[in-house]
Image (cartoon, rainbow, N blue to C red; front, side, top):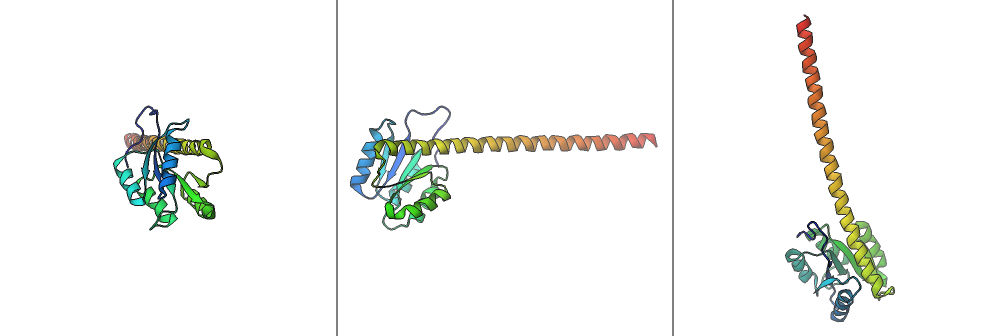
Length: 178
C-alpha cells in the first residue's frame, strides 16, 4: 500500500468512494468534496476499479458499498483489506444488511452507514473523518508498541550480557582463590 501520510498532516483527506449506483456515487462525491471537511474524492464504480485505485493512489479512507455486483459483502471488504490492511473503511449498506455490517465492524471496518443516510451530510462527513483519525491513532499506537518492544529487547540483551559478565568475573575470581 502507498503511504498516506509522511510527517506533517496534509490539509485534505483523500477518500475513495466505491458504489455501483452512478447517481449515489456522484451525490456522495459532491457531498464530500463540498463539505466542511473538504475531502478529495476519487469515485469508483466497481470493486475492480477500486482495487486499481488503491494500488496506484494513496487514500485515507474507502467509502465502500457492500452491495456491489459480482461480489459478496465479505469478499468486497476482504479484497480492500488485502490491498491495504491499514486503511479506514466505512461501509455503506442497505438497512437489511446491518447485521453483516456489524460483523464487518468486528472484522476491522471503522464504521457503517445505512442507505438512505438518515443522519444527513454532516454526519456522513464526520463519520468518515473520525474513521480516518481512529486508524491514524491506531497506527501511531502500533508504532509506539513496536518501539517499546524494541527498547525492551535491547534492554534484555544488555541485561543478559551483564549477567554473563558477572558470571565470568565470578568464575575468574574463584579461580584466583584456589
